[in-house]
Picture 1: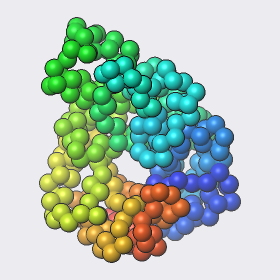
Picture 2: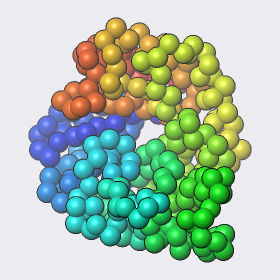
Picture 3: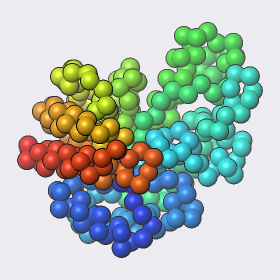
Picture 4: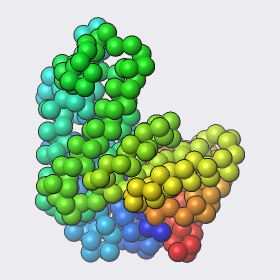
Length: 315
């Protein structure tokens, strides 16, 4: 089983080297670098220096565009949307919303430019983080709806609108995965689709250019029986297996409330027992120093490290 952690990183290579050495000592195979748009514009050291440092420690660097287009994951502070209001979503009433759109060529083009950059500097994978349905009525969405359904998006019934929005998610991932494989075939393409979007798993698994599909059962702060995870994980594993995809799972080590650290161990043991191809932890050092830090980051990280060691020992 491969293991890895997500990593906010730093622009200074001295700090990167220290952290990557720590991950190597844990036996991590992958580092999933949460690269923001600003890391490509101003704070460029994380993109420039990290791939070589990671490889020197025997760790595979994979890029996640964290907060990109104000759509994917946290840290939503999109440089593109500051510069290009035409890339914003539009609601049903024509009012702009400060989020990018999967169907807008400005947005897609920027993601593709960022993929070109991470491939150029030596990243070995690209990860689409938690794509989920939007509800946009911009001109790009209207044109696409008309092409697919020969009707007006603004007049769509709720069921048809929901179908369109889900289809847009799958088509976005397909478009990005195809771009990666056409321009940079060395990149492993990965995608995490959240449990509440599990109806999209079969369609995602059928994307020929997508290599690796996973999900994130972030239940640490609730009291759901961890045994209820097993059928969910098994369902995704079977979906991936039937389509010839690798399967990964995420373990929560962020925004963990104090006293809930035992849930990391309980959930992690279930995930290890299901034997995914990879087990990833979000995030390194429990994302201390950000708004997503846990209340007791040292205790959370200690639990996460224990699970990473158990995962490697499990084979």
